[in-house]
Image 1 (cartoon, rainbow, N blue to C red):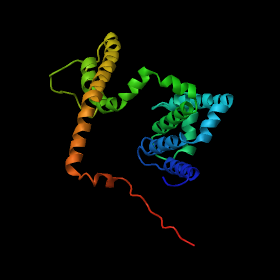
Image 2: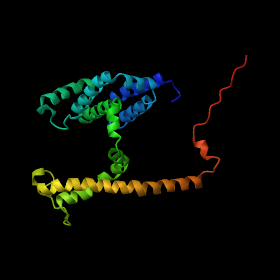
Image 3: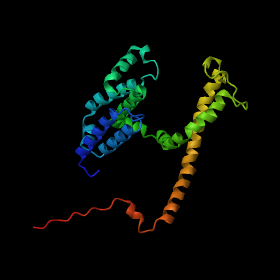
Image 4: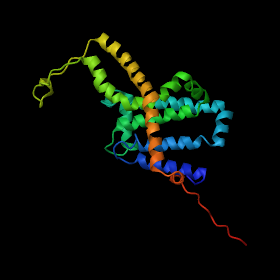
Length: 250
């Protein structure tokens, strides 16, 4: 972080390229996205980039529109049977040359497509202004709580809504052949059409309650624990120490 701006950007790019060729599981989901976010955060302090975005309106559109379209197309890569359509089959064949072997091609393309969309939004002041309206800011405020609770809400509440609540124990057929297994039937189409919007509303209602009550409670408990565990004059020592450089006199 103490490097000059241009060299920090070079380090970010080098790390992105390194993890791009890394075949480890979920590298495109965590490492690459974290570094890409740090890069965009650092670029936000560049006055040169800000001035270019503000003064080159038409050039900026010639860049952002193709980026957004390409990102949407790339992120649309199907999770199964890409060979069924010519465009996805071309992307499947291309993946052998741009991705390391034995990776999740769908996740790689999704991550790349989302990054292109984010970059297009990042370079478009009008789009950022639209996304900064009160409703979307409120939804963004709940995003972490939604991330925490959506799995439980999906596996429990949504399953109850779509398949019903059954107290019967599982009595499936032969586990070796899927055809002989007994599956709980899903509800009729009108149940699905009503349940999913209602469930989304429930998720955001619980997330809003989490943000309003659970997060402040956890922050308060953390602050109390910090006051109890650390002496007042030692709390600042958790920060990076100042580096003193001796000056050489003539």
